[in-house]
Image (tube, rainbow, N blue to C red; front, top):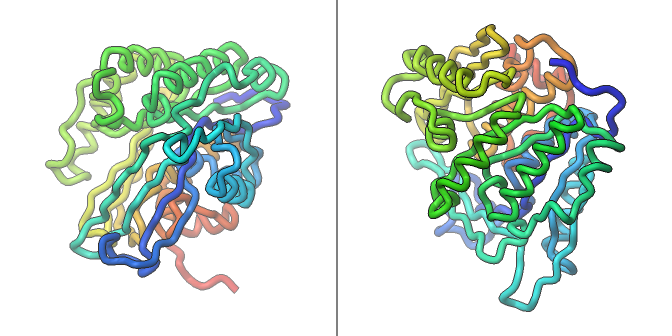
Length: 358
């Protein structure tokens, strides 16, 4: 895949930042804990962090509550991840005004699966507005190699839907590649199905890279595919291929289609694989057993590694392998995002080498 040269930014991601609260006693459920750890989080920065930790310049487009200590906490965290922020500060508007979303979650353990409770009332990220950003400067003057969009932001509010659509149009205008992870959420789509189907379809039609599972493609874009669950993963690969072929027929200008394969044996033991179609060439990572500390962010880690491989100009076979390994890496962290020390650490995961490095 040929990327633009002489760009200030390898990747740009729009996002709504929040905090995740997790029991500090690892593996315990929220309702039993009296002390919680707080981390800054969003699906889109989970993706972006892979490239940022590995040295590529990445910009985050977001919005903050003015004067909020949580906003300061988030800014400091993103800076520690080597992510540059651009975004408006919004007045809180009093105690019942805007705030950053709260994700209350535990990791699960063994036969007890993780639980997530999203508290997004008053979420400041829902105010993300295209008029608050200079897209001609961003894409035309500074230059961006890949714009990464998520369906979570695309469906968050009418304002964010338009924001993502206008970002995609501007990226297309200036020759920036577009990656779109569909990330369908039924609760976000309720009452807006027709509107969002049109927006998601337009973004997908100009995207260069489409990522999603069977539910994402079917419910976001209306593409026929396999039912979720059911068969073992290895037996479902052919049906996943059929779904991706259907997506390719609907969006012939897209170059790369990818999806992860996950079977949950228990909270700490998964089978993890991936499928990618690049042009007319299939690349498959057969499901392999992995150990899981915290599963949240594994899919984002996969996308982050896939996009990093593309940005580095590697051969497609390496994109999916690196993405598989960065997805695994993310599940070994208590943060939602993987923090690779270097490429060698990631390739060691791919190679199954967990020996000590001295």
